[in-house]
Each structure stands twice: as structure tokens, then as C-alpha cells.
Length: 187
Image 1 (tube, rainbow, N blue to C red):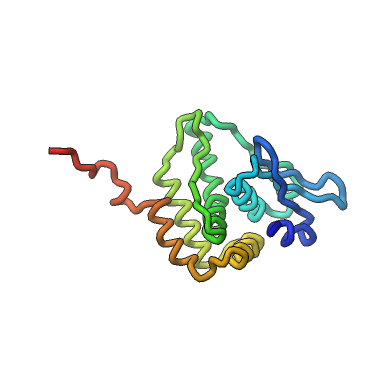
Image 2: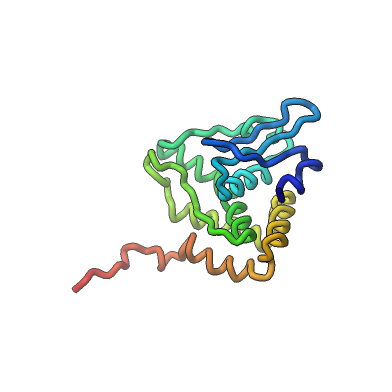
């Protein structure tokens, strides 16, 4: 409802619930609507797909799935590194949307059948760093509009900074907290 109220007329785009796979479908006719499709009605999927839409440029919004390659789960190390590189900004935006909506964000390397993350601690740090920059300098225009709308609707504006500081320790722990070599063994 919030997304559609904001962008249905101005960008001829709506958010719709899909089934298995999320995707972006550009308008198929001049007066038609583009559709951001999220998976299974999952709120986190909707926020993630909206994040992708918010950073896609005008040309990319004319292409199915913004013209990006998608290599399914089970990616090689090289494919996973490329995936992690392009996912930093959308996941940073999704994280901020989650804070604004008062929901829990979970970082995703999306490679359960493959070798997992290429470098999960670095990926977490990169997403955290990008989200920090967005908080400090502002989000891309459409993302900022949606972020502000979420904060207003959910009444979270006054606690975003507090929640951010708490959440970043959970999602992207600092080096000493994440250093598994410092685990003490029983005597």
C-alpha cells in the first residue's frame, strides 16, 4: 500500500505479491504498470525488491529484472564474489527500510547450495559501511522517499539512530567481537 501510494502514478510502478521467485517486470504497454514482484508475501522480500527498484536507473527499469544477470543458488566462488559486490547497496537500503519499519534485518549471501559466502565478514562490513554512508549523506531519491514514508507510517523516526547503533553490532559485529580465534577453551 505504501509503495503503491508513492510510486503508482509518478513512476507507473506497483508492488505485487508473487510466488517462488521475486522479479521486476517492466510495463508491457505504454500506459501499463511495471511490477516489482516479491516472493511468497514475505515482508523482507518486499523490502529487498523495493531496494533494487529504488537504485535502478531509468533505462534499467525498462528491462526485465533490470537487465542484471542472476546466477541461481549454487554459485562458484567467482560468481559469489560478483553477487556480493552488486548486493551491497540493495542490502544496505533494505536494512534501513527494515529499521524504519521496525522489523529485523537479516543479511543474505543467497548461496545455500553453493560454497556459501565468498567473504561473509567483509560482505557484512561492506553492507554496514554503505548503510552508514546512506544514513549520514542520504539515500538515493526514491529510496529516501520510501524510507521517510516507512518512518512516518511506523512511527520510528525518533529511534532510527538508536536502533541503527544496536542493530549494526548484531548484523556486522566489529572485528574483536567477530574474531573466532579468541574463543576460550575450557581448562
